[in-house]
Length: 301
Image (cartoon, rainbow, N blue to C red; front, side, top):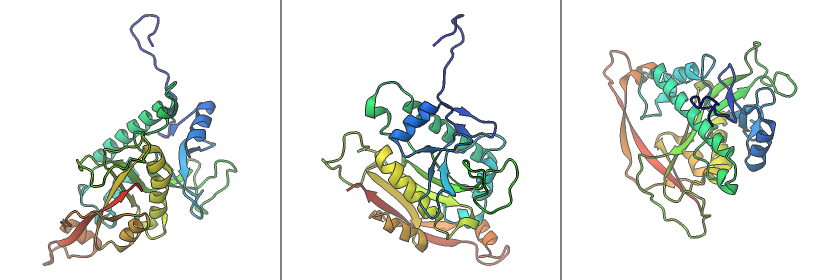
């Protein structure tokens, strides 16, 4: 579409960003259409899309898109990714984790979110415009403080005029491009629209104050069963975890993941992480710690 002068293109987007960096769908008919075809709901104050975690965690905890800008998620993500209790279990991210990398990550995730909802807004296409989705637009776990309908305090925590929710962590389901080949066969009874070629990767990371409360497992299960399988069309998903991470391994087993058969790797944990965790003295003899890394596998029945 071009303006009358023929020089300035004008595009009408079905979404916008609020001052707080919140991705929002302002059009009520578009919101209704999305909710009719997907499990996505919308916050009644901001029109931000979200998936509530199941009871008893929901509706207090939910999955939303990332947020950009001065009031976005960059600071929270940077602090979490520099907490040794979080990054100890992650061998594929730098430590220390710079804010510039967090900003780049959030910007790219916002672009993906925009692409997914733009596809939903396309005319025609029938089922094809709803499935398969390019990825997951709902990655951030948030704890709701102010209920969007009643205005009441749901969390029982102190609040400010601008604080509606608390950043808890992230859960991610993405194309695992580092795995070039499938390990499981394609089955004849799978629907045609499903992804029968690519391998997907899933994982989560939460602020330490929210560990061991069932929030991470609930978020992963919600994203996996409500979005990954029915809307992305995943047919093979893998998860990386340390053998010593008993809680994580138990979660994957409950979701139907099994050992992939790939050889376990060896991960040397940086001394800086050990020092921060109190597992090594700054000038102590223990320079490093070795962990055994494994890949777990799920395939669509």
